[in-house]
Length: 228
Image (cartoon, rainbow, N blue to C red; front, side):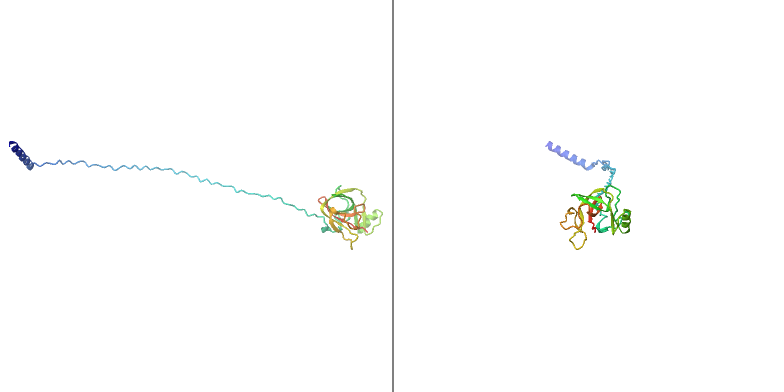
């Protein structure tokens, strides 16, 4: 009983204290918490622009030079087509027909020369150069030598024989005694004088009168000369 009464007294005391005493709330003003804004350190990385050197490569244009050797075709000057079968006297020929009879050298220069074909090989002729005059020049030279001139006069005081190569692609003109006229007829030069026909001029030999057309040091054409 006493214990119960004591508990009751204590309870009343506790209630009494609670009615008169204000439990002061501790007004604790806490200093505002400063929230530091996160410091964002912006690292500015300044990258120096890499200097880009644009290499300009200049490629020299390749020039291809094609050198074509010019093929020079030499057209013969002294031909039957240009001067016919019986050429007129050339300047410096002493009025002899063609290039005359004084070439001034052991070999025949380019020109048209009269003489006698004394022999023939497969590549060359043996040629006895002579002079052929007509008209007053024939009379003058014949008289000077104590001879008589008719329509023409042949002078042959030099016995020198010249070996002259002929062009295998050349042309020889021979006189066919069986033809209706005495116009020289063409045959390949390698075939001359074996014509297979009745010839008028006895070739080769001491009386084989002919004109030789020399170009580039070789005989490119030959024409037999009719002599009455």
